[in-house]
Length: 218
Length: 212
Image (cartoon, rainbow over all chains, first blue to last red; front, top):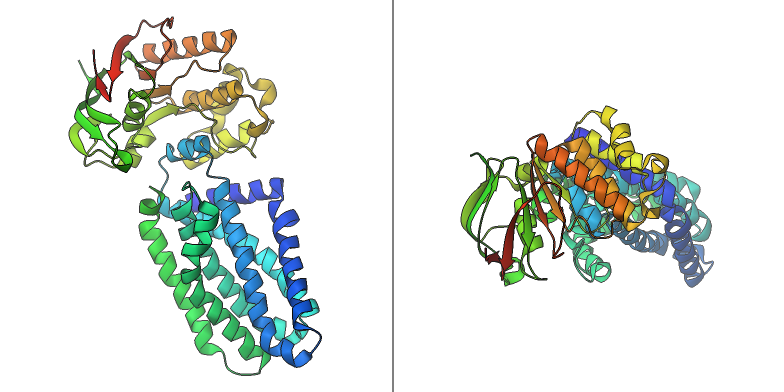
């Protein structure tokens, strides 16, 4: 399972490095969306402390959907899906591999967006640093959940619209917990319970993915 | 004689429409079987079933020892080789990278990759991205994978479509070698005057079942 996961993740990352969709399309989109939200909020620093975490996670949601869509678009041509299906791979390994690759890609985009948030949404660098663990946990959870729903909608007509509709309810606890944890840091409050939720949800979805990814894939 | 695969009264109906409606078919070990029939007769559906890609509604049988109703379809997929209409593997990876990826995933030795690429005539394209290849060259990549895989049952969906004379001759040669090595071949074609080196047994499909 681990071997399959590592090979699948390496393949996905190699394809991404070569196509540079993340670098030239997803990252610029995320930065532009942050810029627009920054302009909408205005320069009032009081607004920023309250609204910036929510805006950051809203932009992150769009970026996650783009990244997951892209991760499954490379599998969707009929010839590709058929030839890989014929390899008879361990579905749990494929699930973990794709989730790992998506997570690493989201880490990259998330880092850029955090820097962008500090600059464009006027969030203090110290707050961003303290919020980092919660953002990383949220990204992990979104990658795992997104992989499950990406596989579910892959190959179905209307995938691009179906993925956000189906995945959003599953993303919601992670987005809310992430935003609350971020806001707690900004307001110097304890965000421990939100961090616990950010750990619990990915653990549950990882277990579900390992057990059911084969069924979802079929 | 040993059977590589046998299907009895098999019904397959993805999305509720029966694409196979009581198919009975036997594939002997080492034989070459040609499925003929008009478009929609069930040729590709029969191949998909033999490849472990379809769920059986009723009927019984086995493919390389795996029960089609109760067995693990992934196990069937691991045992058979598939050559389809479309491209294969990932467009962004090179010919060699795709084959290496498949070898590593299925834990097969990578020593045979170079030979397989040469054999299918893609020696000068090994470092070319698969997405840049023509349809015929795509087919050759899939064929190279079958040469590495050396399956006991080869499933070929319209294998001669989009191939030039040289590629056809190459495919004939490879399939003849495979049957001589004891592999079974099931292929589909709607070409009426298909010349084939290994003189296949012909089965005509009509409405999702064998008509002859």
